[in-house]
Image 1 (tube, rainbow, N blue to C red):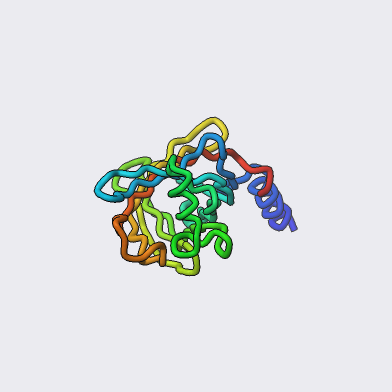
Image 2: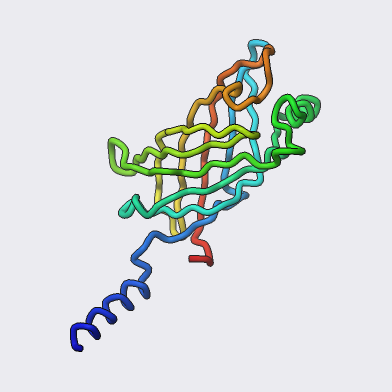
Length: 184
């Protein structure tokens, strides 16, 4: 009986002190999802808004960490309304049928040095899901983390646009600030 009481006390203490990874949410006003691509031989920069989802991250417990986030495809902004409206149409992002672009991690591992990590997960754009991996850094903040990373994708792998003067490959740059969520 004393062992049972001791075990219950230990379990209670572990649960009380949140020894498991803490749930976070992206801070929309401080986070950036940007991209760079070439069009007609010129560099075009753009961004997306509406970043939302759940981020469970603890550098000391990567096996319990995971990321499930999405962005609003309709929020695409390349600083050119005509181009942005075209990118929202069916042959590019088809925002009417696919309003969100989603990323769900399947694994987070340590990188080569302290504070560096490698994330693997499923990126879904329109009706196509592909596995991607990319390095990122994590900096601890007072009430969350700043996660920064970048990766390259081929837009045509996701059925975004066809043959055109737009480059097939683009660079996605992430700078995500998180804060602890009220949910566990």
